[in-house]
Image (tube, rainbow, N blue to C red; front, side):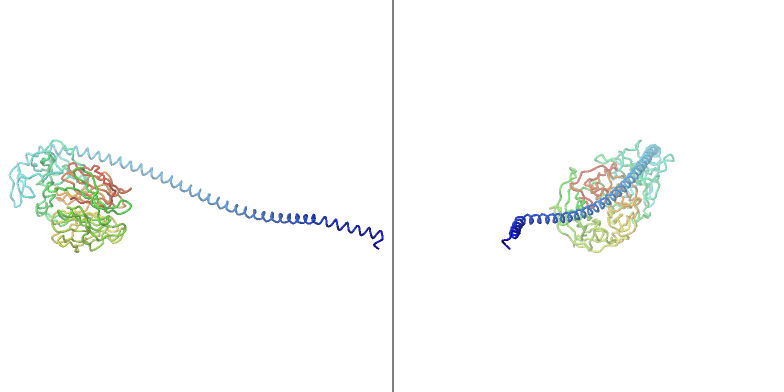
Length: 573
């Protein structure tokens, strides 16, 4: 078979096919690999397409969410814009209303000034006509005696010659005041008993000031606004003085509000600042203690030099204190009591040694007291009243504490009728202390209480013209006391003042300060000036001061402190 031609041809063909297959096998393998790679790429493309589709769906959802957020933001912005427009319209209306009110008040003030000038001219004209008649009629004395013609009985000492009491009030005149007389029928109904001997009203005559619950016609006397006082010449320094008007002096049997008994106060009862006049008050410097600057309570103090009227750094306390009380104990020591250190009310005190001008720890109070008030009395005692048991809110106290400077320990004192924090305190006489205003936990107070140091009991005192908490009080000469600043109802900061006349125990509105002040402090500088320091004006804590000029009864800006201070205390040293 192998030799057969066909067999040989077949074998040759098979050999050729086998060789061809062997030659084409790598090509087939490569073609298979290419096809497989194509299928893999196609699979990868399908996977990528699915991934891209899912990503596009996610982007679409994300974009839709952002569009919804933008629509909500646009709606909120539109609503805010409408509110702002409404508030602007409201502010514009309030501004117009305020301007209208200011214009109306200005018109009323101008009318009052014009009426005052006319009335003062009428009173002065009537005085000349009544002067002769007044010198011909004897004035009653205690016990039925009568003064001779042309003499006035002094209701303090009973002498016929009435010496001048010194500033702050009174026009230039003789060494003694002419006795005050009631004006004739031609005088206006609001004219008081005191009258001027000069033909024209003095330039310092203030605007009429209303009595509490009284009409504007029942105003302060045109003579400096002091019922029961008359013009009295000049002192050695050329300052105007006043004397008591015998005709307006209450009888010794008259009864006064607050259980003070007959008026005027006997000379032995009056504090040095009233009994001795300006010569009895000679502070060397003013110490402003503690407070807060809007960020934290302060342990720093500042000293006001009364000669240069500039503040300098004072001694540093041992603790930070805001809302503390301060008082001059004696010629060697002053005390700072209570207050708050940030959020912690304090029961500690500090004693200032005036010789070394350094603080040292003092006796502890019986209770932690923030926003309390204090005053020294007698030669060996001090009184701390009211306050609150927490930095904000908390229990308001009606209790008091008495310090004996002999033992340097506190003992419980008499309780007030009302709870009072942020109240003011002042010594009316050597036997009476007056506590004014404050906050009882519900509202600001316009009530006062008088402590009788003989019985150690509180009785209701005269009512102020305005509710006040965070106020300050200063005793003036001639039986006057001024209450400054504070917060009224509705958190309204006040620039107004109230003045108490001991002769009537009635409060009248006083001069306005330069700015509104709450949580301020006040002190007497000398015979002519009172200073009000620091406080909060409604926008922030202030470092400014206001100085009251007593001869003119007007406030003007004083020296600036080195630090903004509210809820501080001030002590004349």
